[in-house]
Image (cartoon, rainbow, N blue to C red; front, side, top):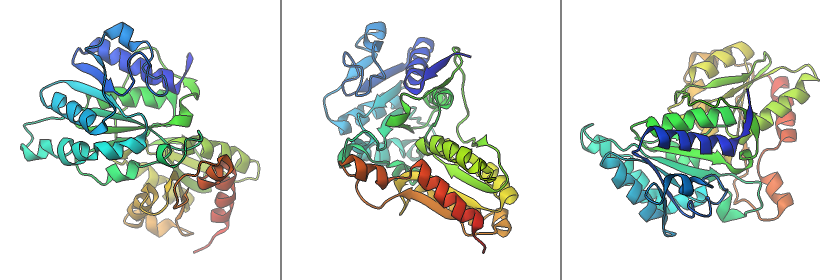
Length: 328
């Protein structure tokens, strides 16, 4: 199978869905001639024209409102905020309108919109352009939250998100854009709400999201040389969350570590830990559940400090060793 980048897989998914369904259109800041802040939509204005690739003023609230309104009347907008940090400005429309309208109209209304949100640190973009805010939206009823970690997953999940009749927050880590992997040329879907075991093991379960899946896989190779076999599970969709593969894995390994980039306090790791505590897997644990996450601080501009603000491969290796040695 051919290999393309995560960024190319997103562009291909958008292109194929726009070719398939004339109701799909793109709306966002600098997504036209400029091709978006990271070049994802480069060339799409020339292919589909200004009525389907719409550049907006730099006002995220208006962008989200236009997408919500268009979705309500039968269109399927895919909006892009330059950085996930700026989704804060769009939150009124996303949280108070898009997420709630289907419920307020007794199921007679649908809001089939996708909000693409480039997130995460590692590019030296400092505090206001490097945040991971996914768990804010996991908390909101009516929203779906997707965080693909591979080129294959990002194409299949984006196509599913576009076809879904609910608003979807689609989180793309900026460091993943250049990652290459096998991706079929034809359109395909990956169901939302299905976790995937990315690596099988017997000594420790690691649940990781987004860029941390890639780092956990690298860490697992180091640990295997020490005789520690790690099982890695990628939820892929944070909401709805498919907990059963995680429960099954924890019952097998008796240990659980959760790794994500967002700040530890209030992060997604707490939700996974609570779900395990409420499940039959709790009785199988031979050690406390451990969360490895970003520090509770804004992401620094200084590249050395930025590096140490979020989990790296060596941190995962070190913490995994500790968890394997722990006893309840």
